[in-house]
Amino acid sequence: METKLVLLGTGTPNACPNASGPSSAVVVGDRAYLVDFGPGVVRQAAKAYHQGIDALRPDLLTVAFCTHLHTDHTAGYSDLIFTPWVLEREKPLQVYGPKGIKNMTDHILAAYAVDIDFRINGFEKANEQGYKVEATEIAPGIVYEDDRVQVEAFPVSHGTLESYAYKFTTADKVIVISGDTAPLPIVAEKAKGCDILLHEVEYTGGISAREPKWQKYHREVHTLSVDLAKVAQKAQPKLLVTYHRIYHMNVQDNTKNLQHEMDWRCEAILREIRDAGYDGPVVNGQDLDVFTV
Image (cartoon, rainbow, N blue to C red; front, side, top):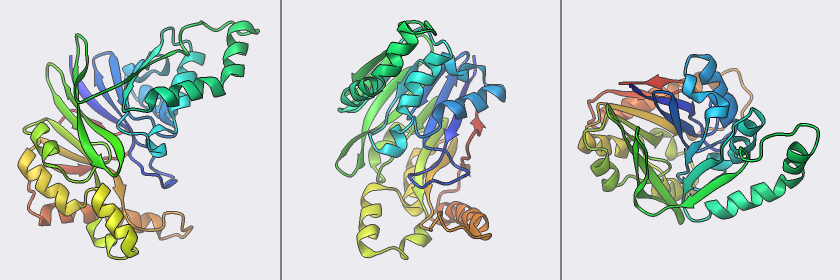
């Protein structure tokens, strides 16, 4: 039973047209375990399903983990709760995340009370379980385990937000997903010798163009490419995959050169990682990429 990492969304808060909101799926056989649910998460899962990842059929999405409560990682939460239910998911969604995930869940369900009532008691007669959510607020340690996977959450540093990275251990793979974080020794420790390390990154060469306050912010809550190289040197994953790439450019600029500039900075990030001393396999993840190492 092969384990795969599927990137559903690799974007940031920027409304980038070719990168959906952050979301990944660890797929083990016919089961999928989501990490984060950025904008468009269910449609991205449907795309992956139609490209051959059967476990990402929307009505089969039943387990998800949240790294932190920033909007770009959670704006697809209502989509994840309700769309699979409309498509006949028959059991509650299980969600694991930091303090506040229960409150967010309760308010989403309250916001859609009219829709829920209509679908259950109106003409459609939807099932009475698929919209429900079992939300669990976690602490560091093993937060989930079944016959396919063990999931460990460990704390990372993303400003004042309670934030977690996740380590998935299956019969054939170890996959670590960083979420948003400053560079930390614990990430290298937990990812030591793993098969895939999926890690956020920002373009070092672009940060000097930002205002001093934004330079300070990004250095404290995100990971520069040169610092990611140091983390990867210590961890030595079989494959380092970047996502949530911050390019430090105006992606709203409607010019013909925008995509060219983004592609250039994307490659520049890889050069910075290599020039900083990391010589292991590294790729920039794109939406709907599938990795088995």
